[in-house]
Image (tube, rainbow, N blue to C red; front, side):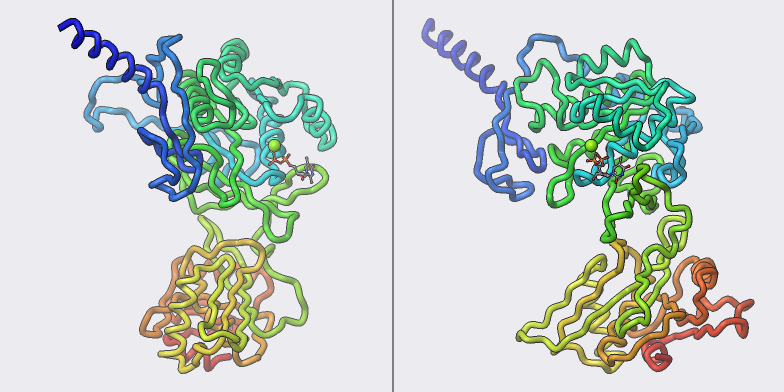
Length: 468
Ligand code: TYD
Ligand code: MG
């Protein structure tokens, strides 16, 4: 009897000790009960780390209340007032546009991007402007306050009311925030933050997750706007646990274009707005400047144009954007011809080539095909189909498409050209930029423009190829 009680208590101590260890993948944040060489979720090798969960030094009831930090009764959704969202402007139209109209109090925004993309710069500019109207706090754990002051002075920001804190402890940040009561709080960056009662190094999965969770709860409880800076890894995911994306309300990404002067801001998740908007900035010696008329910035300005290049009009969120699609078709040196796309979906190219063969009568099975969307823009809609195919045909036949022509339209599997949304606005945008001739789906030809500009409506792929 005595022995069995002993062994039971032994077992209990052991299981208690065991429960303090967890195994978490540093790439994707998946949890495991024991270590293994490969993560079953994201298939990364050697990414599983042993982490010691916090000891019971402090009661952490708050943690069990979810990221919002609130505990509530059950309600019918119809009884809950849908409050009208009040937005706080970032002071920059392009930033507001990506956020869905501005920051929402009590929300958490994760700003990620490559080192040097300008995350610290854009947030410093935003806060310096916001500080004129409301209390703000910029917490920097990476750069020294002197460095930041130097930058702010160089780009001539109004800094009299901008309050800064060099700190990496989450608890002490919250204490300062309690005193300062900022309406906007920036944490630059979440990877250097740590919670004092977690035994793990800053930047590790456990620390990043806990720091973000605690700060998020703080933001939800006090209704402040929390902006977290997050570093990205080579494959463009936010370093640290994926759970970070689940915690935050919006995740936005700042990336450089091919032309390193420009920066594109886009949302990959937004609980308070659409995710298809992009914001455009130029990096100058006076910080990030909004590009107010971005529609033509993705056109290459090489004169005269060569074969394989054509201009299309994309729809990005709520506005048209002129882009140049380039193709290069060369005889393949291998048995297996290559199809490569930059900023363009590879599968879409393969599909369009199949349609071109079957319904356009042009064979590319012995050719390598490369398609590029100039300037680092990603084509995510089908309206660029016709432009892609015509640029491929142009390269294949070595014929130049004149500079003043623009093209858009979706291509179906049976070679039909389908109209796309917002056709008239796209056409007007191109006309504004000096384009004079158009090849568009028949359904998109505006009646009031017939006879005024050289606009060709096409129904089938062969019609479009014959126009060239
Ligand atoms: P930074 O905001 O420090 O990037 P991040 O925080 O994303 O790492 O931006 C640094 C880069 O921006 C650096 O390469 C220099 C450039 N830059 C300018 O070109 N002009 C400027 O006025 C500023 C402040 C930075
Ligand atoms: Mg930085």
